[in-house]
Length: 310
Image (cartoon, rainbow, N blue to C red):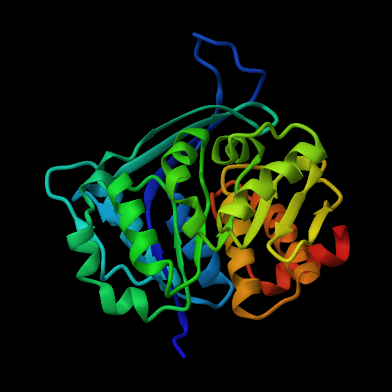
């Protein structure tokens, strides 16, 4: 049996600024700046690598200094980039986020145009590597033809795990969502994907049921401080939360850490109770560090958080 996960999607340079005081719009605000490699699928792969899972990443990079930093960061943790595309004379994906004094996102901008250079003929060159993995994880920042192609070509053979990322990208994923095995939306993305409101517990359950009916096997709905709502095609519906932190350092990478924990749990055959515990603990681990990925991420840290906050 193969022993790696194939990621197809974004690898960014994350530029993070956190204000020291309440943000004053249209003014210069004192704060701290931080650079680190990011991108949803790359982040999931790095978290998996830190959990001991081998990963391969198929992405598109420019030929700039940011690409060099991304490659170096992937190399340090062991993410295989050998199937990725380098685009000459094009900037690498960049994600800029401004956090307020409480480390909540105030505003963010992204330039992921290099990903639009990926197409199915290029991806099919890595057919053997993709089909040889245990599963595929991807994000819908990819071109829509690639989302269609990847889910149609590989969804029948491999479990596909997807994070919708945003309401706009959720709309891009919506026509193909039934080909996804495991989905991790937040409440707003769930509304877009299902076409149903998702404000109350009953509405969230009904919206998940729409997606289950379309073919999704499992759904993990990120609920912020309220934890995670889980529903699957076997009729199980569970909501769980851990004790919240008094203060977080950076919320940017929490969802990616949660997805990595969901994948790790699937690979190791965990039951849903243990899976939810790992998912919630991984999210907490992520928000305790200023970097997009907590460099201390690992099974030991997750188990420690479960003991302390579960």
